[in-house]
Every structure is written in C-alpha cells, then in structure tokens.
Image (cartoon, rainbow, N blue to C red; front, side, top):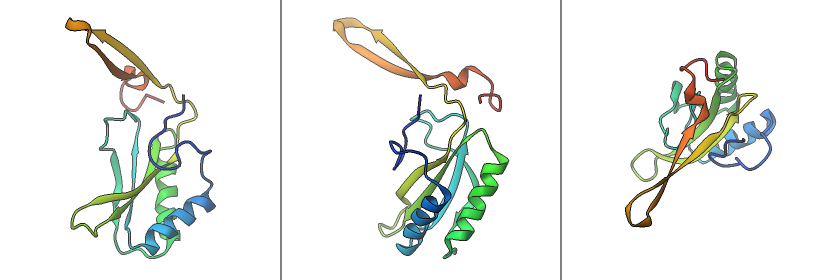
Length: 138
C-alpha cells in the first residue's frame, strides 16, 4: 500500500532534480524549509522527528538537498518529508509538504469497523507498522 500524504503523493516518486526545483520554488517564495522523518506515518501522527533545525537563512537549494541526503543516509528505511513554511500570517503555516523517501516495503493500514447503539458506525485506522517495536518497523 502506498502512503499518500502531502503534495505530489499520487505521483511517482520525485527525482532529486525535481525535488531541487520544488526547493527552489519554496526558497524563491521566501519559505524556509525543514526535513522530518518517521517510521510511523499514521495520518494522525503529524509530529515527525525533525532533522536539524528549520533552514531559515538558506537561499541555495543545494544546501537543503545536502541536508536531505544526509537524513536519507541516516534513516534509509524511514519516511522522510520536506516542509516549507510561510510566515506571512504571523505564525508557522505549512505552505508545502511532500514525501521525499519511502521504505522499500510499506505495510499499510487496517480499517477497523465498530458498530454501536442506534446503528452508528465508527472506523479507526491501525497501522501495521506499529505492531513491531520502534526502530524495527521497516
């Protein structure tokens, strides 16, 4: 199952050249970038581990790509995403976010149906990845 989170998630994986163009677009708009990684991509897990600090002063896409590649090397079997922030609203607002790395095997999710009183039906998601301990999920 292919996880679809963020922009471009329904497209084939972006190449480094395409990622560099997206970074350049973000930097040209004045959006600082940051890199995050996780081994639990559940849709409600919005706080991933941050790789370093947000790159507020970088103006060259090569610097962001360098950090991105270092994160990929350190976590080759994790999900890695790139964020771009827009501060025009006076608060941290995500202007662009997309996955730049996926594990080779994505186990997916199980949809659990729960029926309750008055014929109400609830659904919950269970990530197969969390059945194994952290660090051994992929």
